[in-house]
Image 1: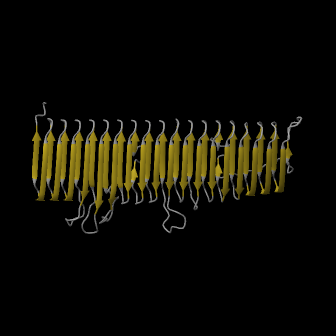
Image 2: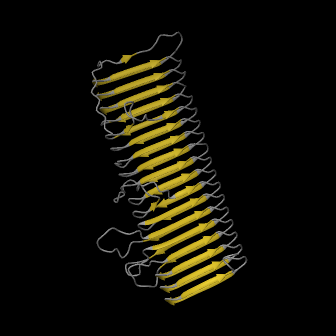
Length: 470
């Protein structure tokens, strides 16, 4: 990401302006240093350009073809470079202060606004010589702001539609890289990266999408985060994604291909994952009008939500700590939750919580598969009773019928629960309190009700309602 600019161009500014009658363009160039190059070309009317360079190895180039275009470049420091190309009546402001900075802005439409502020070392919003170009706005009425205040940050923003807004802030000595692409209209993206190692990639292809992504703890926090990464992809319309990673070493992938979907992911613990860095998506919404929420405040938790139907709601809350932490070897995944909603108007909630150094809630897993319509599922898993190194509770719900309801509660260790609702209008309530309990509830026909409670140790129960051949 570092730029080394050793130019043999004349120290004097190169002011190139084709003469035209009544153009009324204004250009001010101030240079103080060596190896500096300034080039201004204005072919429209009422354009304003101000270049102020003070330092070494600096290059600034501005070309404005439209009317009433405004460009301000202010560079102070080492090896700075700023290139601005505006075809319409757009506004561009670039401020660079120190150490190998580079910025490139291209605005082809009208009424676009671009602001770049870089303070620190090795920052870039991509240069003209890079594979990417920083801050490209091809449409009309787009707004982009990039602030990179410390070292090793990189940013690329592409906006080819109309009335898109992008705000990117990388600070607190972040070794970050952020890429934002918005190709539709009226999209909004906000990316804030506060600490080292954060990587963000936001893609919004259609119209009316909103993405808010925050990675890293706030400034002044003694325990800065590391190794964060996030991928937010919205290819439908009117989707909303809010994602926050304030813990350490989290993974976050959100994909919204349908319309009017809502995703909210909050990670504040250690090494939690909604998706992974190998391409697995934590929250996937292919249908319409779906809502998904993931809250991870514990450690080493996995959450996956897949919504391919319409008007579904899914929620995962994980607050399990890796206690007691076994010595040696890789840390296992402490809690795992998966929700698949292929039908419509389904509701699923999974809560995994609790645990201490002696009463562990580690190694719990839960899954819900809803392929029917109008089903509700609630799974609660914890261990507040059994002194053990792990809880290892497992709960699975399969709802392929319609209008079914399932409620599973597990408190203890080594409990296993399976609920299958293949018919319609069935109700199942299953409670396991203790150790080593096993229960299977199968509802094949319609209108059945089952209430099953297991207290104690090594209880086993099988409930079958209706025939599997119905």
